[in-house]
View 1: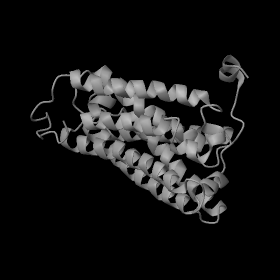
View 2: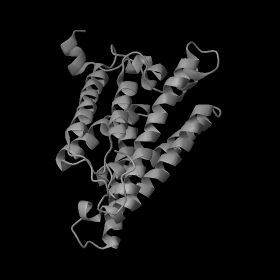
View 3: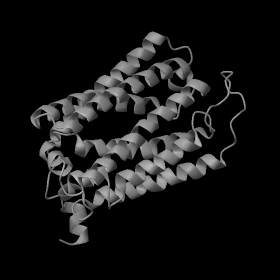
View 4: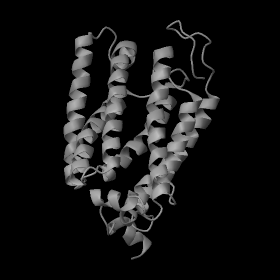
Length: 267
């Protein structure tokens, strides 16, 4: 199959099932230590892209993400808790799925915290000035319902029993949407250099064609030969994240004391 046909009408020959995880990660499998380290590294960066924004939000009363990104991640990770628990049961209690379910619960907790802060600190950014808290909560709840039902529908359409096909889109969004948001705002408040460097690391860990956590689990679905669009998209995400670092360095410096009266913890 030629390149044009592969990009237009080609699809991966393999699939992703819970058994892929057992085969790749059980003790004694070829490269099992490196595979666990690859997944662990991706999870660490995944935690950092919410830990840093929480620090920023607490000290600057503005965060780097638009409201819809928070609701998207909250719905996606809430879905993930049950998907990974089910995979844990199906695979006779394979450890990784339990760890991923716990990790998803931690992410949901951080996302709910950020949504509460967004409704409190970013009210004038996300809603018309003077919008009552009741209306803000109603808006957040509606977004969560729409994302949750829509993402579950997508998961069913993809026959995605482990969320491994869908989950990569969370990386696509985290590497690009905050950069676009910062570009639109035109200021550093609510952002930080270390966060933008983390986005670059997320892109590298997620989309490099040699050792990303999707590839190590299902090479017949995520290799560059089987899934070239994965890496084309990933390269675009990497470029956007690098531009985010450049853009941040060019924007005017933050105030020594923010409007909320606190000093920024992350420059």
